Image (cartoon, rainbow, N blue to C red; front, side, top):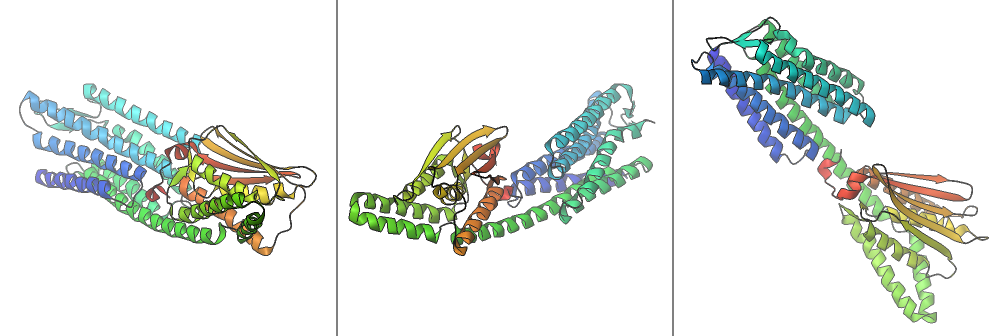
Length: 436
């Protein structure tokens, strides 16, 4: 049995190390999952190494060996509890959507882990779970099964969450968590009734590796789908972002100005060229851009709209937040919609558009308000362009920053709202591996 357990532990350390290295170099998993598995395999290595040290120095005579045995057994129990805690938190993070409920469940896990560690410390002085005899041999106490109360409760909560989330989790995710729930339970049961073979070590290492492989497969499939989705968004943008009607009106306005005001016409040509360059270039951008840059292009668009003297409207800005990032080509279709289908319909009053930004709780909120009178008649092509542009907007917000778009239309005004999570808006970095 002794040599068998040594082989099991050495194999467990080796497999955990392979998992640790694989987690570091894996390119198809997002940063949160990468950090989770790096930590998981570190804990697993310490757990198995502690068990290995306990085996190697068991029965060795001397005070120093006694200290090593106590430390090894303490770490083995401690890190087995930490492993259960980590898996439980990861399941909650990807399964529970409501933030308050998520925090309540995590608080329960913290309490269970704290209780587990406290009882483990008590056991070091009372022999509640185990004792190290005078011969430096590890012996279980009669209350040894109590050590599994906190991990067992965590597993039961995990089981409930897994059953509840069976329709939202992918097949790979469900299989991964079922493996980590079932295999350690089998190992614990066998360890309680069959003393001598490290069943828990075998089960824990196998569960960790199976879970890692399945999550990597799941993340890879999700990233491939996300990349395909992004390419579809780009293709749709190419067709729907720039309105042919707007291009025609701008060119006709510039043509008229060439006769009446050549200087303004020249400036209009420059603005139009920059506008087109912005729209085309941004189709290849896979990152968030500063709001001020997007705002600059919006102002270019507004100047082009005002080249036609008959298109009379006002645009006002109330920018309480400007130092943030947003997906490119998201604000322009909203402003275009507010001007063309709102402000320009006004006859008895001046058309007006108001653009505001600010922080509200954990979000950056951009609002575009406009007044209108009646409904502007539009062609089928214009209606299609409008629909494509707004759908692209929703897709880009969701894809790049988990943002949302909403529009409320009243009797005489409309309010469009773009909401971007504050951490995404301030971070400004987009990694396709984080898209899930």
